[in-house]
Image 1 (cartoon, rainbow, N blue to C red):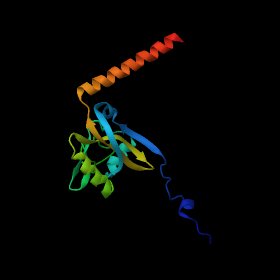
Image 2 (image 1 turned 30 degrees about the horizontal axis):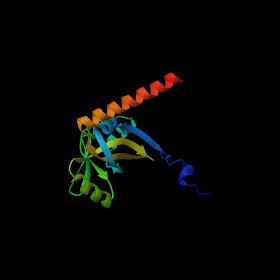
Image 3 (image 1 turned 90 degrees about the vertical axis):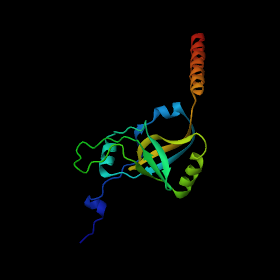
Image 4 (image 1 turned 60 degrees about the vertical axis):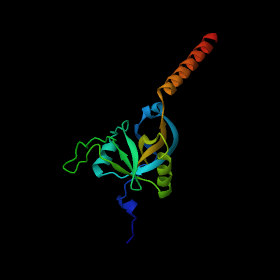
Length: 166
């Protein structure tokens, strides 16, 4: 009698490879100066994972905070799963982030500085695991945004002039 492995019996499901983007916070780079980024895992329930696999989430209003030596992702909207029953999750609940102790200590020190906050930049699956990219950021002032827009417009005009000369 020959013994077959689990894969030969067809019982092992192929694991997802690569990175699949679910949600991106485009406003973050416009409203904040990004100082540092950290990748963190997220503690999720089953229906939240299924809803994310459908590609449904909004991180625009989200932020992260440190409480009792743990980092929490707050105000991120993951809609209820359509086929979920009474076990469905609350869409805007606080979700714990999975970070190493030294990373949490570093974030605690940096967020206590004046005007620093933790914001989510993107939410994605990396090799089948849900991850969030958290940025340590400083808010931009109104005149910073105006200057950035003016520089972008000036650069556009320069490029147009170059194209016209050719």
